[in-house]
Image 1 (cartoon, rainbow, N blue to C red):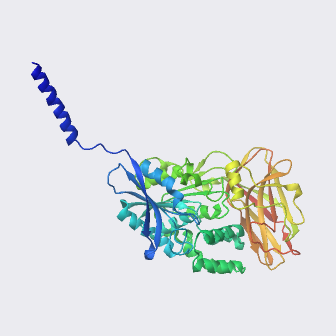
Image 2 (image 1 turned 45 degrees about the horizontal axis):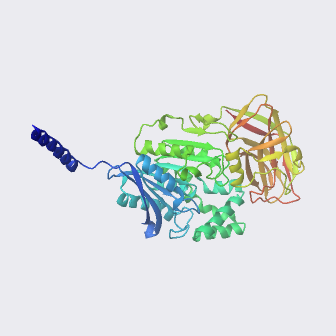
Image 3 (image 1 turned 60 degrees about the horizontal axis):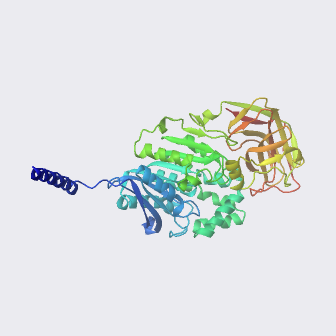
Length: 500
């Protein structure tokens, strides 16, 4: 009897051991690996990249994400977000240093043909060496990487989804708005290019023209480097996330481009300056913009029914605080327009006033992170150097929503005169917060112009009023106003205020 029990026990143990030996090994938990690679770009130019591949999910192929770096930044920029996307969602992700910067070879061609073609060469490599799926390719990035992504989507039909954050869509319109050089932005880009990269002939010639006050000679490089000129070729699903106060690529050029996109699209505008709204998300930290980026790629590359395509395509967060608001389209943001008549006025040119648009990157960051606006004490604005028009007191809260427009009849006398229009929310003490602004540079003569300020969503508190100020000097811009000339505004001028 005891022998039978022992025999049965040994038999059970043997069967169990045999099962352990013959059973397949347990599937490893999902994770990711990171490697540092050299990828041949266009013409074989070596591009340095961090490649993050998913583990514990089989051998692939996996949806492939390609993330070109920002201007002046290297391939570590997106590694945190890449690891998160690989680990949580099973993407194979390549974060690489753009041509001409840091450890990648070549010269900076300002998103020229070679830089755009690099995106396609990285896709080729990712399919061949990183288990990427050529039928499920997404491209994205911040700033320089964002513009490259849109341009690559127009050039390479394999790109099915794009996430363009703090992007430009029209290079000339961004850096030379209404024939006024955005000097602080240009100087920042040039300094970063020299400090972190190797400027190529296009950038060197553009800088020379800028230094010689020939910025109009730079304009021919813009169309081939502007996604707006190639929008008809973009068939991918496009998510755009920009900031209201972006000092490099203001939102007006983005909203116009967004309306022209014909495929699936999503627009997110929120407080902040260039790249500030999404910078922490690139590092893998919690971030609303990157959460939407992940959902966007999941929907359009993996086919997940996560509901993002059923949400309103326009998502806006008021520039002076508040939660996200949803709209069916950009035109739907404006429900009505109020008109405020502007009295005739005459000012001298070339004298600075305390009305200013602020400092690139600093001003918008203060607005975005701390809700500290660019302020002004309107009673102290020099009326001899600036026209100041006060709108009526708002007895209930109102929302400026859309693109304010200054309809002005203007007479200038100097060869070139720069005007800077500022829209402020002003309290009963005369203290104002900058809502939006826009420059324009004019030749001599009389003309009627419709000056569109940058679009915004801004809640005006009950008891406050809107005030329009126009002067002729702003330190952010390379203005053309000279001391001793005049600007005359006709009595038929008006301010048109979009409201939700």
